[in-house]
Image (cartoon, rainbow, N blue to C red; front, top):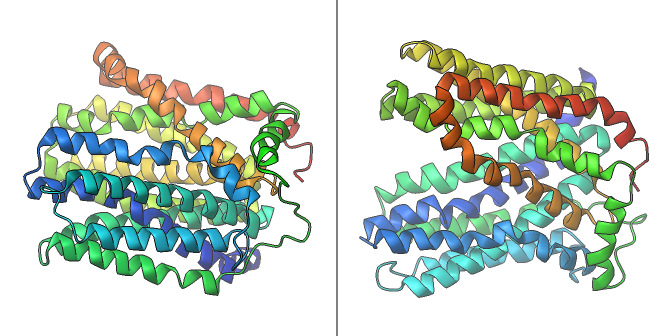
Length: 409
């Protein structure tokens, strides 16, 4: 127990959590929250839809991650220097957005959103690298939990808090308030410490920063197996979650019930699950956590199979949603910690950006077939299929010791 408290009650964990909040803030301000503002201004729905393209930098962030591994700002160090630059860029961008009218200046707004997405994605790159480098291997599970939960709190501020404020003040003042909150986040950099770099030699050229991270990963033993595992471990959960809302509506739950139970209960149970998973990983380690949390994740998905075979029942829905969110958050914590453990600290930003981008591939590729499968298998058959999809990733964990036999530099 003392080991858990020592891991939890230290300044590095607090900084990881606060950086998570800073990381989660920008995304919805150029996404769902911005769409609400545009809708209030009677902007055409086609234009609102096109604005989704402004978030492209979040998908392509691995392209410039090598630049942030190679070059070190002349202040605050290799990681905090870049974080400060990104935070100031986001704050200035939000302040500039607060001066615009979406209906009258859509092109200017779109340009600003693209710039904000660039700074937001760049901040994610460096904060992910910072978390990996500042924490010991034994702390990666709890640290991943703190970072992910902080990210969710940031999204709550940019989503729910911003929407509530918009009922009382103008949207322009809402974005000015978000800019002020982002400026407050700058203070974290002066409280946080820079990761130890005495044994880390950054790439000497930009070419090395681009080529060496790929070569370092691909040439390690069983690299292909590791990449396949990253693709498979969350595929069952991803495909199930893609269809949750259509499923709820189709079987007879109201929008209010979905909002209160599916979203509100889901948010808090996800936070709790991430925290529980992080604490448990201090004792369990990454390997056992992936096994235990992965099995719990699979079992929790089966809850929707039972929901599909019964009449609408709020108590059952609440139980299934809560258990699913807790177990999924625990599995995600172990998954994120595992990816962090794979990164060579010389190229953390680039390698983590690549691996985290790989996380989204199953949702994009296999998620596109989720509607077709649900339609043809029926809801009970679809969720049973999602349960089965968890098995290949779990079986690959039998090879885990081979993947980690070589020490990470």
